[in-house]
Length: 588
Image (cartoon, rainbow, N blue to C red; front, side, top):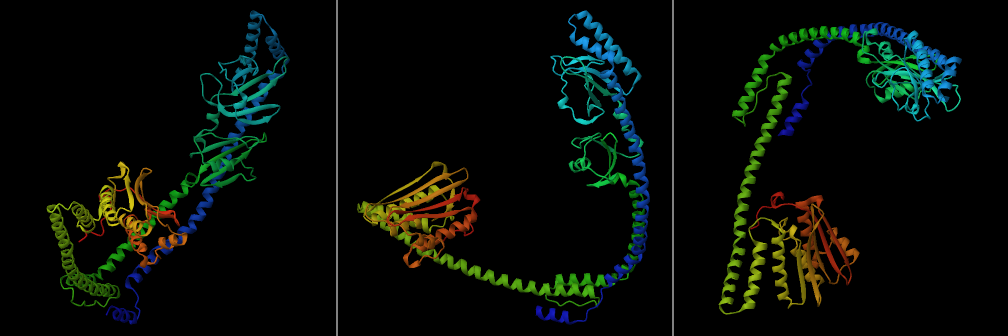
């Protein structure tokens, strides 16, 4: 019936959806002109504003670079005075060779006066010091209190210019300051060990050069050394890809890298100054304009929505009829629906009609299943009569044997009753390893009596695993296989259960019987063993039981050689009884 309705629905002529028509024309009328005007204006304004902003940034960048170049030139001029001027160099040579403390102090005072004079006439210069790195005290003379751990190798090398080495930016060597400075080292021509004049820029120079207010937006700067091997970010941090791009040689003064604009100035001295601004900051004025356009678009959409609501109210009557039809379907499932003659609503009602028919069929199927389930419960109760009768009969035999003093028969029947009670009982399919081992001992003792004690057995387990849970009747089929197919005179069967790691348990059933070939093992593991031999039936049951309760977490393996015996190993995760899902319920 469902198939016939689908066929009838598909055979009806295709009609246009009123909703689609309304939505399409309303959106087209409201948004299409706005989109055309907005896109055109966006690209025009973007080009104008971006050019203006870029020009302002380049102009500011050149001013900053000029101030840095001027600072390097001042350092160069001052260092040449200290390193090449004959009088001060002669005094430094005498200072190094002088042994009299008084004369040495006079020379130091004279050198300090000259250093202070130069520093006074050049406000760009900060700390000035004569250094002898190979001396025990490397700081010979200094204008300010300097740190004693001078190590030029640790300073970031910036460039080599006009015969001197320049470093920075780096923290000042002034002992009570941590401002970033640029520095210069120039060799002084004196006899004896190497001596250098070391000069730093004023402690506030970099802060004044990179003033954020000069741009009107948040900027970051990078200084790239002469060889491109060192990139220093002046303010904050930047992504690694951005700093790597700044270090690469480029002929362009403007690059874009990972959401950042890079404006580059290359100094004649060989270093580079790079201004970095996020695209979001760079485009802030453009975004402000976009926000205004979006607000206008929202008002347009609001107007279109209002118009849509007005039109939708004209369609309210069919919707109300649809709602009434749905309520009537809830009250009477079998009653057919009546259509509204509107394509969208009729499509929904048609789906409801199909759903109603499917629900009716499912209700009938559930009723049939419940009836079959009741019949199964009755059959299950009837199937328990024979085991109960067998238990009662064996208990009677056991009582008669005790009454007549037949201890062997009493013991045999007692073991048989225990084995049957364990295998045919109504307890859960999930037991502890301790319960499974007790059942195995009873079963093997029963078999020894049957086979006139022709074999020995051992059943052992670690104390730690006795409380772990396993499916009932897991090991008995394997033990039975060992007895029936592997035991000869003076044979033995061993069941050993141990802890394997922190969360797994290893169960082994071993014998010294006839063993199997590799081909027979492969067939048994693949479930292709011939059932008439009996071995495949019990092993197949164990394999299915393990897959049911442990799935891919278990491992089942056989090690055997002809005439050398067989070992069946089971590796399972350690679980509690409540952790295993007793999907099979109780056994009758």
